[in-house]
Length: 123
Length: 461
Image (cartoon, rainbow over all chains, first blue to last red; front, side, top):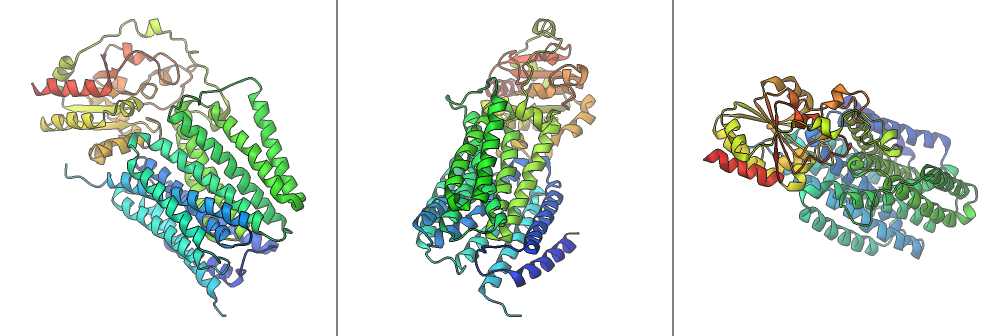
């Protein structure tokens, strides 16, 4: 099942890559917006499918791990901090980068720390 | 078809998205979990590096300094935190993520030249609003879990009205942002301020024991904020990763609400009618029998099947290592030992599992509620360590009880029950627990860790 999900992602990504604008767009066409919404909807479905299979014993690492993934905001922060479009944008972007990086690095590290404790023991 | 650098970056984003999904898939079993987490980290690294190669990114100094500072702080927090403080850490990080969302949206508004797209403006407003609520809500949750003195359960009349007012206010300001983009930044920061207040008031009235549900919910909101940012910046990776986080938060929220048999609405906006059950303390505790470590040791000595049910009290007493020592003593005597983990035991789902794993207890011994309930009649001795509401039979027997219908661990069906507790004080539900006065139950009063250690010593004599 994961194979066909992968393929549908690749197909959609190819469509999007062909139309991807060079920089942040000022206007988005309706069809493009619908494409983004489609990506969102598919991602939620995939997310639900994968996550419901995670056993309760790993729910705390799941919470900290998914929290780390929410630090993906760092991508937006990098764009804001690096655009040099205005001083305010750079300052805000810099702060966002610092905070999002804390979220990401701290999140993955603490999740790793927890998961390492679940290694099979010889008991 | 010609491929330019933007396309390569988008391909890198696709790879990162796939790795995120495969990483989460790795979490479906302990054996592949570490690898899964590393895949997620790798995906994040690819995403950041690819973004830095974007043509819009002109100056990297601020970025590199930000990454350096963030990494150092993140590492220090991650390495130094005690496992018992895990819920607080998740709440704190979640708040930081929310703050980042607000700052990114604000940064976008500060940098963009013209605003003529309604959907982009709308997404900016959304990610700012959601980010702000997540930020303040998470910080309040952190304060409650950390039991900071100035964060009390504040509940006052008309609070729901004020919350509604704040919510409408922030929505109005968001609308103004879209309709009058000439002053977009003004509307944005005003809206964020109002949303911050909303976040505080929403969370401050919820009791500490419900914080895990709140954190899972806030987690889902930070995912939603990330997706909204993705709509603003036309970035698929943000949309996909945000959706994954949102799904995770919602699923965990639903699992916990089902485990408590309370609807999300009741958790967020209801108040627990404490003590409205028909059973008074005197009735329930008329036949409470107290025991000693020596007696418990004698019972364990002749037992063949022992079940341990941990709760938040075990975390507070930091008794998990003592529990491991006792477990090893029992195993050496060929006594079967299993752990019954209720889905909302402790402050976070799976928190008990993490603590017991930290104490080097093999995770195969940790069983879920349904598993242990099905073989409860074969249990010779059930040790309840720091748990209360999750083993309260009133949930099964009393339809008027605040915990009615909540699935519990049926320890009362075991042959003998030993409850280790400091006193007869109630759990969060504020009601008496007839388990304590049952015929097959004995109370071992004392601190969780000290009690387990004494039982262990008595067993060895």
